[in-house]
Image (cartoon, rainbow, N blue to C red; front, side):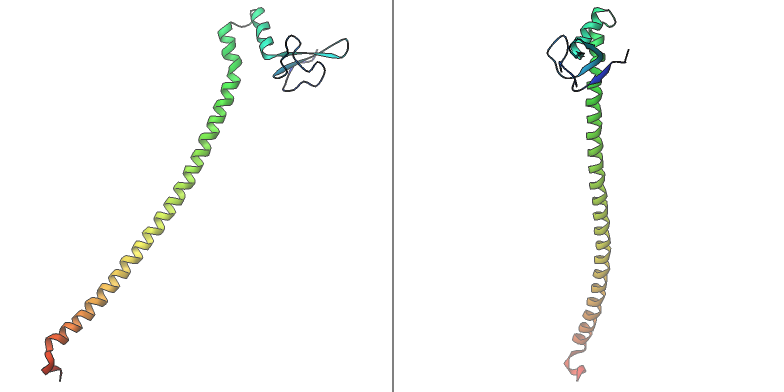
Length: 139
């Protein structure tokens, strides 16, 4: 007897659950009926069978059955958070680089301001000396 296998899409007739019309999330039992029919069970019918045999209580079975969906949702949520983190990290790196470039530019401008201040101070002293000497001393 082969192990049952979960299949997304059945491969043999009747291409659906043996007990209902569901055609997705099926268990392939590998049991073939006369005429080449394969026995498939959907998740809902398998859940009803487990309850009927007493293998699982109602709410607990529902919680366990939905755990896969919850995990998939959480994995998607984690992937979304990772993407947001990487985007924020990239933006932060760009902002830090931009801030460093602006800080360097500020240092450059402060140095230039100091040069201009010294030049203007020197030129203003020369002009002040010229004004203080007057026309009679200049000749």
